[in-house]
Picture 1: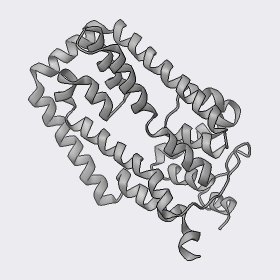
Picture 2: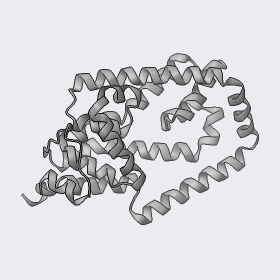
Picture 3: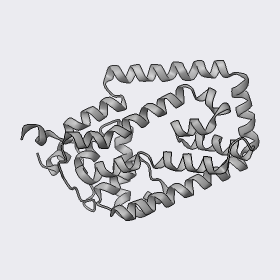
Picture 4: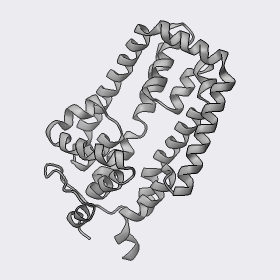
Length: 247
């Protein structure tokens, strides 16, 4: 099936400014590319479950598990209170934020349209945002990589065949800027953040009950539906490599 036909079957037309390469690298190499995404998803889940424990005791470790803006700000607060070093905060946050980007860029570069359709179909909300991002990427792709180098944007950069060196430079610049911006936010909101962290510490068992319960409930609910990140990545191998299997 052609990429154009695949797009038609999924009910939308892609921005013509985004080229769609279609390479076949084999199942083993594809597994090597997507495996880090699955590992990082597990790390995020663990970070959510034990977050109330780590957020006051080891915020850098929490950021390493899940580098959400919230967790990065909490880690910045620990630095500003003298509990951790700025160099550790910056190094851990910087490399953790970059960790999934190469995998998504490679997926887009090697599989183009197929990878985009796969990501659009993961959830209805993500599909709608992906189509909006795709239209915007055709007009301001370089700016998007700097401003919000998240998973969908990195995949679109690969699909648009943005040169590796350019993508890496823009991605690194955007990540550095994000680390400093969140550090600044942590400084400006130091008092309310410190108050909130004290509340978490005082009522930690209750917070843990919520995060453990909700984390496990979400996992088993998605597992039954076959929609956990790991299951979706396993399906991705079948969706991206149909010709490899029938050759």
